[in-house]
Amino acid sequence: MARKLEVYYDGSCGFCLIARDRFGDLDRFHRILFRDLNDIGTQAELSVRFGRSVLESQMHAKMPNGSWRVGYFAVAEIVRQLPYGSLVARVMLFPPLAELGNAVYRWFASNRREIADLLGMPPPCNEGACLIEDKDRRRAGSFIHRLAAMGK
Image (cartoon, rainbow, N blue to C red; front, side):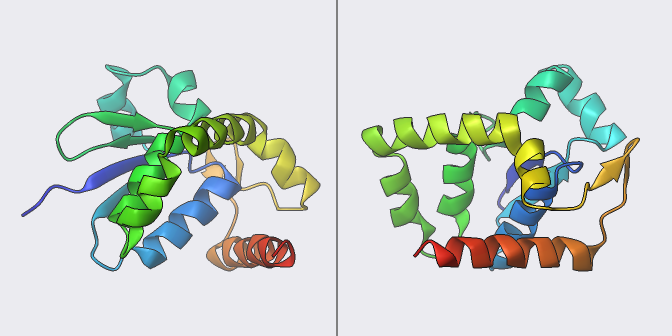
């Protein structure tokens, strides 16, 4: 059995949960394994390699060969795993776009909770226990999707 791309995301982040759900819906060939870095087992496994603040700052993806991608480059690897995603990932990684995408990703990642508040998304977690329900995540995701469609 082929190894999967392991994606480590912040399960206490509403945007991260929406992204996980959307990418998961598109992962028709089941090439991606999403792992919440708030899970005790995941924390123990990763604490040897990364500090908690490093993991929470950006999405991390462990490639099937054991190498790592972080932030925007992790997103590009997720996209590469999706049907017809290889071409999109190549465009994302083209040097001028990669530099811009990485800068935008780092800004967004460091401000994601404030952006969620501005958009009226409910806070997903309190004291480590997730409060957001699947239907609320879907509704918030639909809001983001509609917001993106308005920009077209």
